[in-house]
Each structure stands twice: as C-alpha cells, then as structure tokens.
Amino acid sequence: MSAARAWAEQRLGYVFADAQLLDLALTHRSASARNNERLEFLGDAVLGAVIARAIYERRPDAGEGLLSRIRSRLVRGETLAEIAAETGLGTLVRLGSGEARTGGHQRTSILSNALEAVLGAVWLDGGSAAAERVILALYAARLAVLPTDDELTDPKTRLQEWLQGQGLAPPAYAVSAVAGAAHAQTFEVSCTITALGLAFGGHGASRRLAEQDAAARALAQLLGASP
Image (cartoon, rainbow, N blue to C red; front, side, top):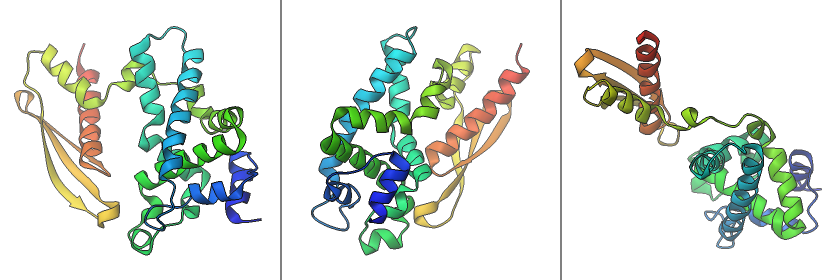
C-alpha cells in the first residue's frame, strides 16, 4: 500500500477505490501539468456546502450574516492549512524541486489547496455522503466550539471601533522589523495610539497577522482598564 493510501485510511478514515484520484489530489502544479487544481475547485465547493449545513444545524440562533462569517472562518486558507498540518498532509504533497527547496511543504496556500483537492477526490471517488463524513470528522473539534460574533470581528476592527466610540483617531501601524527566510518570515509591528500616548508591539507570520496581534494587545489593556 502506498504512503498516500495509508495516510487516507488512517487520518481520513477513507479507503480510495481509485488511488489515482488521490495521487492527483496530492500533485501540485509545480510538479506536473496534470495537477490538483481541478480537484481543488470541486473540494472547495463540497467543503463550503458541508460546513454551511453543519453550522446551520448547530447555530439555530444565528442569522445569515453570522452564519456567513462563521463559514468564512472555517473554510479560509489558514484553517485548512492548520487541519492539513494536523493530519500530516504536507509530507505527501508532490512538489517541483523549486517549491520543495523553498519550504513548499509548509506553505499555507499549498497545504490548503491540497486538502481541498483531497476532499474533491473523496467526493468523486465515494460520493457526497463519504465526503461529508470525512469533512465532519476533520472539523469535529472546531464544530464543537464555534466562534462567537465578537470572536469573528478581527482585533484591528474592534480597536478602531472602540477608539471611534471614545472620539479618538484610529491607531497607526508600522513595521519595525522583518526576520527569517522568505518562506518563513516573522514581522514585528507597532500599533501607536497617539491621543492616549500608548504604543503596542505585535508579531506574526505576515504583516496583517502582526498588526492583528498588536491590536489584540492594545484591546486587552484598554478594555481591561476601561469601566
């Protein structure tokens, strides 16, 4: 049995009848002209439908807007890459030499796309019921603790709204340092609230994530100190 089929059985609980579909799902475009992009397209659609139904059933109190935000959080690339990493999918993706040398097996976009492609392959191989079982199993822990509306509003937005509510200008963000290789950079940023004479640092794997981290630190202090 191939490593890929063994992985599918152990980590997905699914046995492929057509092993070639799984192999295709694990082939990045850098490795072959015949790659996983079409399966990724299918997997994205299947995943969205299954997750939409799952959160619809689990959150009967939620309106359309909140349901959409929850779904977006669950199917975004970062979440898919986390699940892919948890299952060990990255080691199985077939990459071209250039992508492999630059850390492609850990890249968020490659991991998330490969997982969607695998889900598309399951759907083609075993049908919608099989795909739904696999998706619900992969998402079990996340579906058990769905985010609240407050948790879905990013820290930068919440900080700006809080400052506006106090009649204050929005914060200013600036990158203070960038470290690491191109495929594994770490960003350091500052979040300055001039009107209050405060500045907060944040770090993350991208400028956006670092700014969110700094904003979250600012909120923690401001809300903790506010009545």
